[in-house]
Amino acid sequence: MKYLIEPRSLLAVAIVRAWQAPRLEAQPPPYPYPYPYGHGGFGPGNVLQGQAQVMDAQGNLMLQQEQALIVREQALQAKLDTKRKTLDELNYEREHTWTYTQDQERIEGLRIMRLLKNPRENEVLSGSAMNTLLPYLTQVAHDGTRGSPVYLNQDELKKVNVTGAGSVSNLGVLGNVGKMTWPLALRGPNQREFDKLLTQTVADAAAGNLDLSTYNKVARGIDQLQSQASELWHKEEIDSGMYLESKRFLESLRGGIAVLRQPDAAKYLAGGYAARGANVGELVTNMAKQGLRFAPALPGSEPAYFGLYSAMVAFAAGGESDTGFRVRLAPPILDAATRKQQ
Image (cartoon, rainbow, N blue to C red; front, side, top):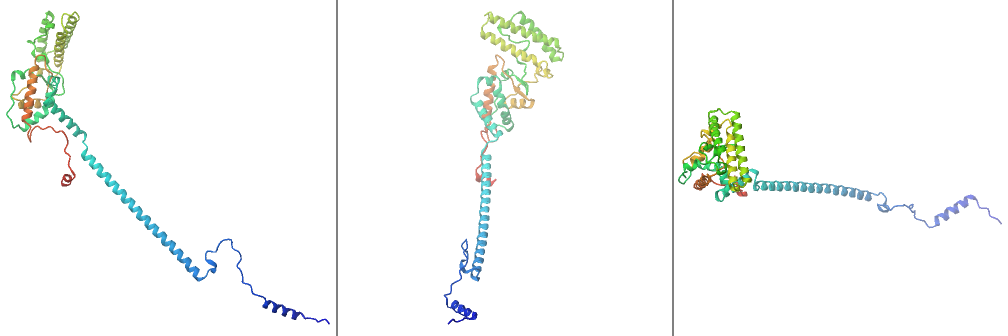
């Protein structure tokens, strides 16, 4: 006998079986990356934890920024310290490095000391040693010395040639025209005729009447005497010593002739440019006032130059006082304590 089951009964049976079957937990779908907040989703705890991490990151950022500012300030302070040390080093070098003027003072001081102790013979005979000492001795004469005056032999002083400042010309042997002592190699008829012409030329120059033709005639006469001495030397009628003596005499004479064409030739011939003074102090003072300098020595006047040099050295030694002559060898170097006091 077949039983007929209604559809309603089948539906009830299915519901009962489904209710009696074991329950299965719902599984989340597979995710390609791990979930950063665990499996709790976006719950209240996870949200607070995220906010805390954000605040912690902001705090670390602000701390790093402040540390960066501190490091930057330290770098700026280090730059300032380096700049200050550099400036201190520059000031130290500037204070302990001689300037060009100070170095020249040192060199000149050493030169003065050498000239006072051990000059070369040519420096004395050329007048350069006395010319170098002249400014310093003028200061000594102005300030006064503690020793007695150093007197000069007037006869020897007349043998000392001088010239104007900035000029190398001087009368030389021409200052003794009319009574010159001619070298033996130049003496003869030509020399005697030339001596007469020379005397007349000097007289015309002193009166301001010297003309060009007379001047040129004298210049040619010197050239002829020079040729005469050379010819005698080549013929071996005179030795080298006599030839050199004649050559130096004519060179001095040629320089004296050059003075005659200058505007102040009359002053030279009248003795306006001459070394004058009873002592060294008066001599250097007069030369400074007139702007004169010592000229090279003429043949035969060498002892007068050495005597004058010795007198000037003695005068310098007497003026080595606190207010007189002193040779400055180096600029003063102050220490740090002295600089602060100033």
